[in-house]
Structures are given as C-alpha cells and as structure tokens.
Length: 414
Image (cartoon, rainbow, N blue to C red):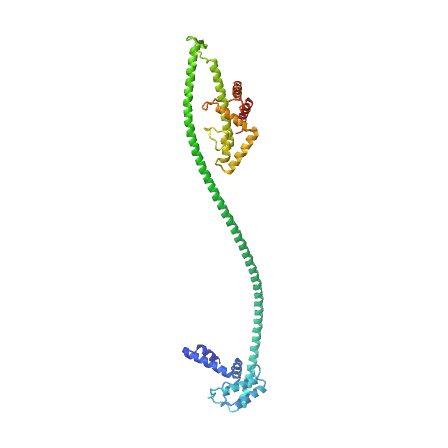
C-alpha cells in the first residue's frame, strides 16, 4: 500500500496519467469501502508469514481455515481481529484483479501455519513494544499540550493587560488632542488681539505723525507771529527811547552833568515821573503774565512729560483737550488723568483761577518775558497792579496771590 501512496505523488507520469491514477484510486476506495485499519491488518499478516512460503492457489475456504487457526491460538488481537481478517479475505476474493502466486509452496499447510504462528507471536511482542512507545509519546504530547495551554493562558492575560494599556493611551491621546485644540483656539484669539493692537499702534503712530505735522505748522505760525511781534517790539522800544530822549532834553539844561567816582562824568537821564509810573505798571503786568505762562507750561509738563515741548506755550484748554484726545497708549492716558487729579487736589484748583490767568495774559505783551521770576517780585507786581485799580472781578489781588502760591508749588512737583 505504501508503494501506491508514494507513486500517486512521485511516480514520473504525465499530468493526465497522474489525474487518471488518482481518480482510479478514489473509485477503488469507494467500491471497497476502504479504511486504513485494513492496511494495518495486512501489514501484520504479511509480517507473520514465512517469506518463502507462498501457498497456491489460494481459496476462500483455505484462507478462512487459516484465520480460524490463528484466532484459536490467540494471535488475532487489536487491529488483527478475526472479523477484520475475514473482511480482508472477502475483499481479496471479490477484487476484480486476479491474485496468483507463481512460486512453489510447501504442501503441508499445517507446518506452514505452525511456523506462521511462531513468527506472528514475535510480531505481536514487537507491536506491544511499539504501542508502549506510542503511549509514552502520547503522554509527552499531553504534557506539551498542558504547557501550551498554560502559556496560552499567560499570553491571554498579557494580551488583556496590553489592550488596557492601549485603551489608556488612546484616552490620553484624546485628551491631548482636546488640549491641543484649546491651545490652537487660544492662539487664534491672541493672534486676533495682536492684530487689533498692531492696528491700534499703527493708528496711534499715524495720529502722532499728524500731531507732529500740526505742531510743526503751529510752530511755523508761532515763529511768524513771533517775528512780527519782535519787529513791533523793536519799534516800540525805539519809540520809547526817542520819547525818553525828548523828555530828557526838555527837562534838563544841556550842560547838566553829575560827577562820578574816579573823576568821570555821566549825563543823567531820568524819565519823567508819569513815564516812570507807566513803565512800572507795564513791568508789573508783564511779570504777572509771565507767571501765568510759566505756571501753565509747568502744569502741562507735569501731566504730559513725554509730549511737552519747551518752545511752546500751553494753556489750561490744552491740558483739558489732551486729556481726552492726545494720541497715547491707554496706560499713559490713565497715568496723565491720575496726575491731573492729584494736582487739582493738591492745589485746590478752581476754574476761577483759569479766568484770572486768562485776564492777566490778555493784558501783557506777548514777547516780554521778565526773568528770573521770584516770589517777592511777583508779590510786588501784584500789589502795584492792585494799587492802580487793575485787579478786579475774577482778577482780584487775593486770587493773584493764590496763583503766585500755586506757581511756587508746581516748581517742586516734577
């Protein structure tokens, strides 16, 4: 049978012949209802016979008697049962292929059977040993299966643990993605805020440039006005000088002179009393006007230190306007407003002082700035103005003295 199994796979044949052989083998197995147990039985019978003994011709009766003898001796066991041997006899007799043996056999069947029984006994012992070996292998395989089952259980536990770790990592990834989205939204919001701030800064820069251009224009106008007033002032000085010289010539003889130390002589040229009084009043008015100018400039510098320009004259209306409209960062605006509140509280400020300063400045010459100012000089100028009846209404002596005190206080605020 092993030759049949081998040649079905390895016999050099054309593919068509191979297919035909396999098909024929399938038909034979189906017809005979073939089972592998028959192959084992034939192998046992062949191992128990004498190789040189080939009884011929074989008959169904002879084969049946041989089987009964073997069974009576207890040699037909396991795969080699009496029933299976009879089935083999039936298969062999019914098989369409003729079975003949060409070699000569011993004529005494009894002797052949005895020899077969002896040989078969040895084969049975060999089979028993093989069965014991198979049992040991089966036991070893069972132990290996148990070990594999234990390993499989350990791997199952490890797999479960690994799956839990994977789920934990997935949850963490989900949280990180959520945090990432939150950060992206925050970054987007900050980008928008930065864009708005850049736009505000750009607008502030544009406003600053516009203010600077306006300041330059105002400065040009101021310079022009200053030039005109300077010319007018020079003309007035020239006229005053001519008046003094004329009055001097009228009031003194041509040869009048005074002796000075060291023998040098100098002509005296005192102004007439009424012109001296007029000059004192003008000087007092200019002095108090300068007080108002310096006071308001000092206030502006305290409140807007970064925007102050020394070549400009500031008024209270500039302070109020710039508190609202001067292009500044919000932080600087808040600081300026806070400083203005502190100054008002410290000076006990009232709008009447503003009206008084306005009246003083309107009465002075714009280009005359007597310097330096002192508290004594300012007080004397105020008394002189009051004695001439020039301090009335909002512009009272008391209010002017209060302005002098404020001027003194703001000198220490920077």
